[in-house]
Length: 200
Ligand SMILES: [Zn+2]
Image (cartoon, rainbow, N blue to C red; front, side, top):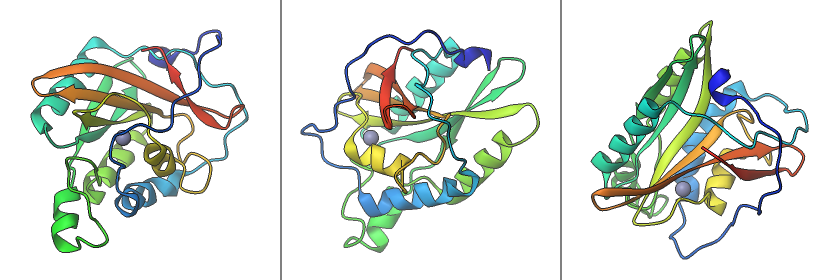
């Protein structure tokens, strides 16, 4: 996919794992992860890309989604087409419903966690599976927190120690009130067995 053309690797600092931000809910994360496990493939040990070019329209669409959902987290996927177009597919965050139903198992609300609606997710992944299309990225927002790939985010993306979708970029949108502070992308490096930040 041209929009995700890999460029020469450069040294970069490791992705920071911890911050003061509340953890995304572990149990809740499992649902999102479980829903995407079906397409898991074994990745070759490559360094991973250093850069991912996203169309400005796709970035703007994610930005709008994050702002609309504030102060809750949003989530979604990016699906690329052979012609270079990138579709931003919103996934409903059902964290609050899960929390209301079972607050012990889902202690967090949508302000600090997300569970992707399984139906939305299934539809999106099926759409990405069609000929000429490709799952490019997962995204979610961090309301009132910076854009880093948290330990919980890593755990969610790697439920069995390796990423369910090693080729998919992980995008985190930091949103404070009425403005998006930053958007960062993280790609799996088979060589490092870790997510590394990539230039967007
Ligand atoms: Zn996160």
